[in-house]
Image (cartoon, rainbow, N blue to C red; front, side):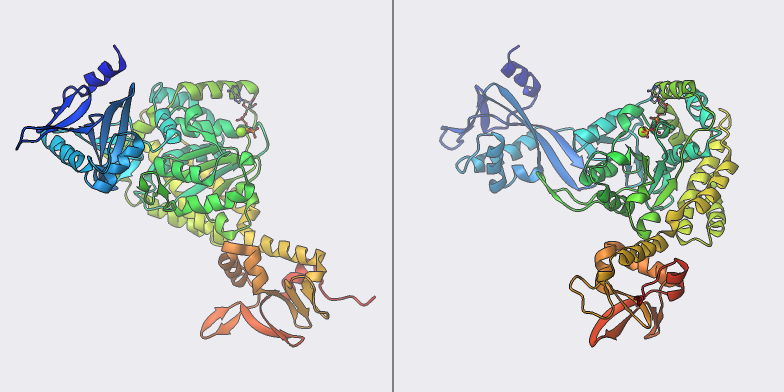
Length: 546
Ligand SMILES: Nc1ncnc2c1ncn2[C@@H]1O[C@H](COP(=O)(O)OP(=O)(O)OP(=O)(O)O)[C@@H](O)[C@H]1O
Ligand SMILES: [Mg+2]
């Protein structure tokens, strides 16, 4: 069959509305008054499908035509067929339209839609929640998922099932029972899809530790909840925009990227953490016009040799990351890893679907349980600002572990929940990043100590004034802090103030850390560092008389 015949097979079922007709793939119009035939267009276009994107509230049509040995197949917004200016733009896509025939083409498209009742498909451009409906590509729904791009298409294709839920439990979950650091991320992969229901903000779960101890293996186990791990996971070696788009496409499903070491630019990691934790993408234009903002509420599972927080300097990021550090499997030999890696690629996807189904049926019986757990965890993290902020998310994952033990009791799931509690206390005590603000101040003091010519003491400085030192103590200039701490400035200064690392005083009934001082006739806006902290850390900024 030649190409034109093939095209014709696809469109022959559609009726051409009178007074138009098609001859030899060209479009003509008969003038009813005088019976004359007018030539309209070198190709006859057919509207073959109608897509209704419920969220963006727009209708799109699939337009087909044949030209020069090739079938064209374009999806265009409804407006592209209704206004002269836009119809002419179709010329850019190879359709023969111009100032002369645009008016007739609009008439033709309108009559065409009237004559041919097109099947409407409801489309969405992402997985997860569309309003109250939850979409899983293998569960029936009225929506057709149209991924915006190839990357997203690959993720969509990864969501598949292989093996039974019993096989997954026995071969993937069971072997992780004695390792809470591995269980936590795997359970967070389930928890991810319920973040919206419980109105939780997105969070990063970062697994770090030395090489070849099974971080990637665990990540594959996380992915195996929803689909084929090798396709579901991709590398960190990508741009923040690509990560944002993937998060938006997955929407409620976990975003799993391997190896923070390979990130293009480690400095971008902080931006990525913020962007992800905010749960919304930036508004940006695209070929089809403005794409609109996208959003998600999910878990981002990362791995790397270094704790992801090493790459950031902010108190803010620390509150958005649950760090599982020093990751390793104890007493496991190579056979364990080989078997695990094989099983993960054999058994996947079924458990996730079953989890969705059973949750829908039994959600009611868990009412109130999460609140209690959250309170418990928040209390046990009382002394630590950041841990208290991630306590809510941590408690949620523990809650889901309890839910799974109940939902899959018959299949014998029995996650040792107590071990997850112990892990929380360990993270609390282990993690010096949770004291990030203090560390940042120490770093600043170290930097000043090494670069005394940035401290204004007796002589006017040639280089920038980062700090001032006089008989009253050490003062950091606001300008320097702004530059140094960037978007984290407010949070870090707040933490310093609350922990007494800087000196605060009352101003207009508010406690503030800044003040104005005069030094050698010049005035500066500054924050004073608590002298006892400086001494406790072993710094001395006074000029020693030699
Ligand atoms: N497909 C596989 N088949 C068999 N063994 C594997 C497979 N993939 C990994 N392993 C083994 O599993 C162990 C853990 O590897 P894994 O890649 O999970 O470690 P990792 O902590 O991610 O290391 P890295 O920091 O280098 O990324 C290693 O001993 C590795 O040889
Ligand atoms: Mg790895």
